[in-house]
Image (cartoon, rainbow, N blue to C red; front, side, top):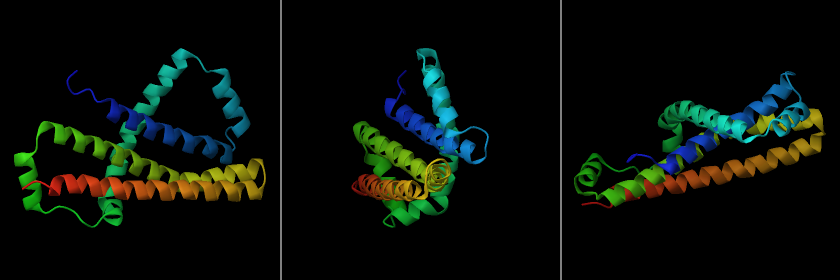
Length: 176
């Protein structure tokens, strides 16, 4: 139980919930289920047991997607959001001198960065999918408003990612 970290679990569940919110309008676009049918099913089947299953499903999806997010982040997103990475000497100094409370704080920053990165990756195509589903079920101006609002959300996620990654690297670079 020593390694139990509620922040990491929360971030994985949030990423998994992001995947589910991507799949709901996708099912509508593919004519599998309508938004109305999906939302009615969710409301009708809301029980404590189903909530536990949903949490487990979200956590599992979040864990699986975290590997994809890590790969995408490593390929281009981490460099795009921050170019001021620590040197090998700074990293070595950090691991030699860092206290456990600093490591815990740094781990929390990484958990939130990872969560925001995953949500950013999910909501990039998700914004388009939601706009198409809204257009299909309502009208074009509701779709435009949805796209604008989700675009603002994407910008907020990117800015938060940039800030968290800068803080994460600053913690590592501050040790001598």
